Length: 223
Image (cartoon, rainbow, N blue to C red; front, side, top):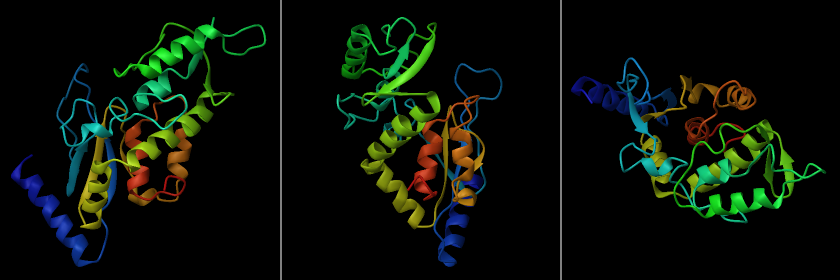
């Protein structure tokens, strides 16, 4: 971090505290190490970057679904990523009534028990639905009922999340960065309309960066 950027963070924090304001929350996309082009982290004047990727700084990487867990679900998953990925049912894993077969449950249980997170499970197979608590969920429903709810529950209990809340209460502006992040000002969108619109847009990922920002900014529907 340059001294100039560090100074802008300090100045913004002092201004917020002077005005009795809580810090603001924003999101940006972190370039993937395999991507072409610019690899530098995005900067927003007056905002401290919080890298929430599993390969990020030790202090914050525990907020990644690849590492966050175990879950409180039944059956329990060792990390949030595997809860999401291994709840997917693919072609060839349903019976004549459209219900998941024993093969699915065997694969799911092994995935849930694995401490190593897996991002792309059976990526060449046709996805049918998510299976959750005896129900078949489409992708949008699964995002809300599995991903958002379980990530929110887990992350609220983490010590680093509480530390981020403390920084915001001290007036510091935070920018959440990750591979599925996108340009977003959470503080200006606390009514929840933008996040809920993106939640239902299946053309783009809806990553934990957005969920975390929604929680930190006390966005309606994400509190």
